[in-house]
Amino acid sequence: MKKRRSAGIITIIIFVLVLFIPSYIAIASYDKTENKPPEVEDATMLNVSDINGAKFNFTDEDADGKAIIDLFSQMISGSTRVDELPVNDGTPCYLVSFSIGETEKLYQFYFSKNADSYFVDKDAKVFRIPTEKASAFLNTPYAASLFNVSSAPTLVLNGTSLLPNSIRWKFRTTQGGELVEVDPKSLKTSVDTQTATSDGSLDLVFDMVPNHTVVVITDENGKEIYNGAFINDELSKLSGELKIKESTVLHVSLEAEWNETETLDYSGKAKYEFNVDFAAPAVFSLGEGTVTRGGIVLLTAKNVKDASKITFTSSPALTSGTKTITPTFYSDGKNSAALIMIDCNTENTEYEFTVSYGAVTQTLKLKVEGRTYRSGYTSSVSAAIAQSHRSAAALSAFDNMIKSQLSKTSNVPLWDGKFGYSIDEANPSYALGFGHTRTITSTGESYQNMVVDYYVAAGSDIIAVQNGKVIYVGVADYPGKFVIVDHGLGLFSVYLHLGDYTVKEGDTVEKGDVIGSAGTSGFIAATGANHSIMYVQNGEAFCGYELEEKGIPGSN
Picture 1 (cartoon, helix red, strand yellow):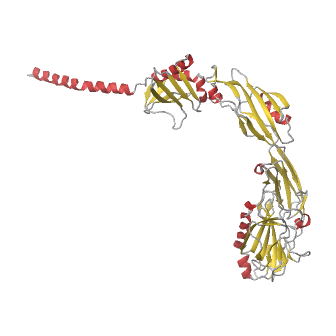
Picture 2 (cartoon, one colour; picture 1 turned 135 degrees about the vertical axis):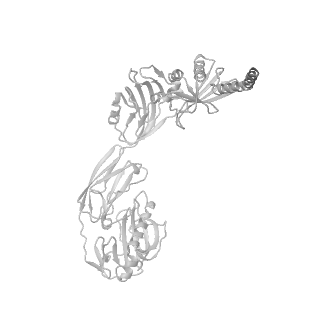
Picture 3 (cartoon, rainbow, N blue to C red; picture 1 turned 90 degrees about the vertical axis):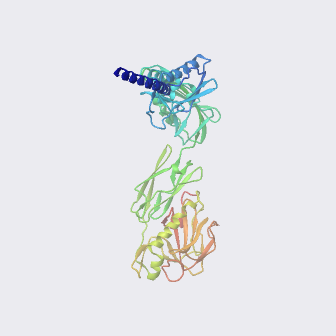
């Protein structure tokens, strides 16, 4: 009985084994197939794109092409399946395409110089490449994009990068290894003539210092004006040897060589051809060496095309009240200029300006003469008028309005000669001059007068003090009805307390043209009609007396 039972159990076990073994075999076979590297040994063509986008095409019809196809085939056939790619997303990779008959197989290869290398197939399966096969590829010219020293040297002229017109370059993949010549397809070269601009200097800088450099320079007529050789980093001396004083375009031919040594990881020869558009060196000058407190002086910058590249410092610092100010330079496309305002309350008797553009730096000195401002003046204007028309909010709104018009200023001077008066009288009657202190008796407030006040009859003509363009016509609490005329370079004349206007925005006016009539609008500090004129430079009020006496020195 026991023998029969044992025989039955054995029969069942055999039956189960017979039933499930094929499944186990199938699973094992499936797992082996899933992890098996792709088969590409029959490929006849290989296309490779490196991490810089350079493309290489190989066929089995020539020995070199067949060797690269075989190397990539061996990298694939000897690989091992892994769970994931141990590199960050976005890591640059080689794009590789095998052609097998009519079939194309695509892969992404991730090579590492110091660690394992991998590839990913179209199904996103990841395989580790045998180290010796990856190393073999790293010693080919097609691995150049993986090495910094394989890139062509960078030549920079005054901030402009220049490409070689022709170059041969070698690099070392391992310490002590052989230098490998870079495939020309991996090196960026220039076909067209390159042009760089210069402010008078010729600062040529390589990121990889060549051992020997020859520079030949010809003028616009093809005449050779310079021929010199430099060793190692001596190329920096070229700018000092070649002094350009006039605007011109020169042609530069440069040949550089990096010698092959046991320790240097690169060597090669490169030739550069390019033009340099030279501008004559910048020249800075002040229209006058002396200015009175509260006045302005013109600073001109000849041979300066781009005003934004001018740097300016002042010792001591220029101020307006409690603010530190920096002059704004305006350009006409060839030269630049700035009007410099000197604070009416400065205690400094001399300023030293340092101005730079490109290779040029100049120091200019300006003496400041004193001007006396008096106090003790009073105004009987009512508290209601003072509080409504000369409040902090009203003054701030007026200040912001003027500054908002700066974008409309002309880049060139519009004035011509001396400035005139804003009222049509040979001997104007002053209510209060610029810079003096007035006290409002009804409120007790004292303030420094930053305009010039005139006594005028209501309806009197108010005229332009100089040629310019009307950029604003409007009304506000403090100035009442007012007009702003731009004279260029951020210089405005502002006509306050008008009764009416005779101009509109956009009108061009000449010195003496009527722009409105005297009235009583806004903050009037005297009884009856009163007119005030304000001179503003880049949003800051200044004294215009010297403009009436002699104009702006250096501008004509």
